[in-house]
Structures are given as structure tokens and as C-alpha cells.
Length: 273
Image 1 (cartoon, rainbow, N blue to C red):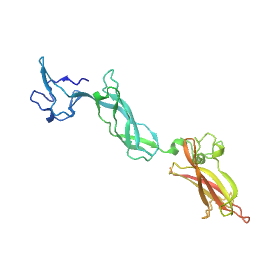
Image 2: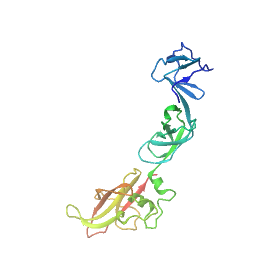
Image 3: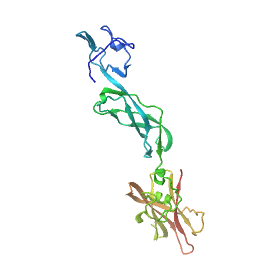
Image 4: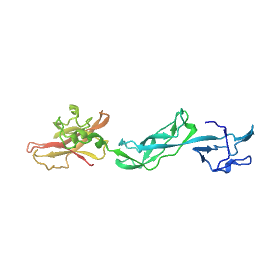
């Protein structure tokens, strides 16, 4: 758009040689344009060849966003939202887009979450336009477990013998692919730092989902559905490993053993949804 444009009398406002533009509301809307005065309080008024015009101002097209919507995202701990839609009012041949920037009200997963648009125009002709921000937007943040399970029941057993929930807890890439043997829990008999015999269960645990807990439990028999907890069960973090774009903790749970009774260590995964 040109910086020098003829100004004619309109039904909305009139300009004359004595008009002080700094007294006008800015921006002024007329026929789809906005008059932007910038930082100059007194743009120059010029009369030439029978036409009157002001210098040092710009006229900008006023754009809107049609079919505005918020893209569903997976939980990543941030409020960042991506807004999609089509700009309405861009002149033919002009290169103008928008950056899609918005913010959810909170970073927690949920549906119909309010979203505030904070869009900026992009492109080589963006300076010739203004944008009316869309309002009333809502969107969805999916939890990590929702993305992982999809329509599958977490308690169902996969072809590799593990429930989908246990595969999620161990850091599998997806619920249907076999889990790597290196991620499966391993039970051994060893000794602790005091030389006492212990039953040890070494396992990997997902830590990026606060709704998931992975707890070691010991039993005196495998048929007992009720866990037997003991204060002398010790869990030690041995380090971390990166797999399937996740950082997993490598942990070891130990419980003392002796020749008078048998004990079994196993893991319980709990997911609050």
C-alpha cells in the first residue's frame, strides 16, 4: 500500500487544511481500511493539482480469520496453542499469513479449554494489514496416556504378554509393538551394602506422566491378589536412559530374604485418568 493516498470527504469523517489529525481517534476505520498516524502528531497536508492529501501516514487493510480453530495437542507442560484458520481480506497477489500463536488457559490436559489468540501477521506484505484477533476459542490438550492408548483398554494384554499399561509404564514406543527385552524387569538374588542377601528387581520407569505411578510390591505367594507391603523394601535410582524419545529412570527394588520364607517381587502400575 502507498504511503501517500488521496483523502476525500466521507460520511464518517472529513479532513481539511486546518484539521489536526492528532485530535482524531486512531486508528480510524473506513471502507475496510484503518488510518494509522504512527508517531507523527502533524502529518503534512499538501494541495497539488487540485487534490488534497496528507503525507506521513499509512492506510492498512483490516483482516479477519475465518474458520478459526485450535489444533489438538499432546500434553507437553506448556500453554502454547496453535490456531488455524483462513485470513479474509488479503488483496490478490499479496503475500500475507499468520503465525498461529495462542495460549491455553492452563497447561493441564482437558477438553474445551479456553484459548487466547495472540496472532501476528507474517509475509512480505504484512505491514500493509492489521488483524482482528479471533475470540471465543477453545481447544483440547490430550494427556500422554490418551495419545499412547488411543481406543485401547490399558488392562488388555498385548501379544508380548504385557498389559498395555505395563508397556506404557516401562517406556514402550506404542502399545501394540513388542517391547524391547532391555526394558523388561529383571529379578536377581544379590547382597546389599551390608552383605545381607536380598531379592532385587531392576526395572525402567516412565517419569514424564505425573498421573502414573510404578510401585514394587513383595508377596509370599504369587496367588495372593493382595499386596504385602513392608517398610524394609528399598528403591534405589541407578541412573537414566533415553529410549523412544523418552527419558526413563532405571530403578532397583530390594527386599531382604532368608532361608525360612520365600518372597516374590513384582511391579504395580497405577494410572489416574
